[in-house]
Image (cartoon, rainbow, N blue to C red):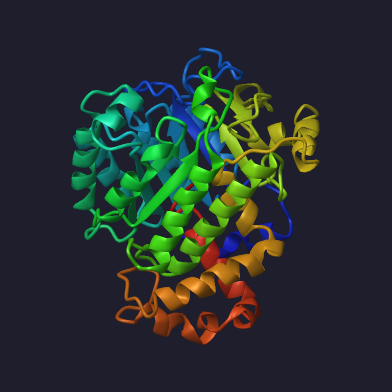
Length: 414
C-alpha cells in the first residue's frame, strides 16, 4: 500500500495541498433540490467543456503525492472515463484513499466500474459511499427519483459481493441531514445498522447557498439526537465498525467531528482553524479551482495557468483569498474539511485520544481481515502495547497515532 507517513510533515507545515476534491461532471440522473453544486444561488458555474483526460493528467502531475482524492459531481459514475481518471491519480499521485460518492441509481454500471478501479488501484483504499436519505418512497420523493431506493439497495447488494475479493474496498452509506428528513433519522439509522456489508454510516449536514433555503432550516437538537444515536451504537456495539486496522481510531474521529459540527452550528462561528486552500483544494469539471466547495470566489482556472496547481496557489489572486480563510472570516460544517482540520491539528489530539480510549473498551480484541496488519494477528494484540492504555500512553505513542490516523482519514468520509 502507498505509504501514509509521507504526509506527517503537514501536521506542522501546511506547505502544499494533500487532498483534492474533484467534481468530475455536472451531469446527474437525480434532481435533489438540496444539492449545493447543481442548485446553488451563489456560485454560478460557466458552462464550459469538461476537462479532458489529457488535461487531467497534466493537472495531476503538478500536484505531487496526495493523501486522498475525493471524486464528486453530479453523479460521478456518469463520467465515461472515471476508471481512466482514477488510474491517472493512482499512478501519478499515489493517494492512500480515493472516495466515490454515488446516488446508486446505476447498479450494474457502478459495480462494473468499481471492479475495474479496484483492480487498477490496488494500493489505494477505495471507498464507495451510497446515498440514503430516507426509506423507500421517502428517499425517492426527496431526491425526485422514482424507484431510486430500490436501485440503491441493488447497488448495495452488487457491491457487497466485492468486499471479500478486494481487501482494499470499503462500502458505506451517507445520509444528508436536512429539514425534510430530520424527523426520519431514527428509522434511517436503525435500517443502516442492520445492513451487514455497511461498515460506516455518516451523516452530512445540508450546506451551501441553496436556491430553496428551507432545506437548511434544521433543528440543531434533532441533529444532536442523531449523532448521539450514532455514537451510542458504536459504544454499545449495535452498529458495525470498520474492518481495517485502526478502525476504532477512525470511529473516534467521526464522533469528535460530529460533536464539533454541532458546536459550530450552535455558535454560528468557526471554532477551530481551517486549512482550506493550504491542505485542501477543489477542482471543477471545467477547470475552476476553489479553496473549498462552499466559497464562491475562484482562485482561477487551471487552463489559464498551464495546468499547474502550484502556479494558481501562489498567484496574487489566491493569496488574499486563502489568507481570509486563515483569518477566520468564514465558517461551515463541511465534513470532509473537518476531517483535515481535526487530524492535522495537534491541539485536538487529546480530545481525539479520549474518544478513542472509550471505544477501545467497547470493542476489545476485534479480529479484522486487513492487508495492512500482520496475518492471523488480532487487532488488539497488534496494538495493545502502544495504544490500549489510557490517554498518557496514546500521547506517548504520538507518531504511531498519527500514522494510523492518516490511514483512516477518509474511510467514513464525512
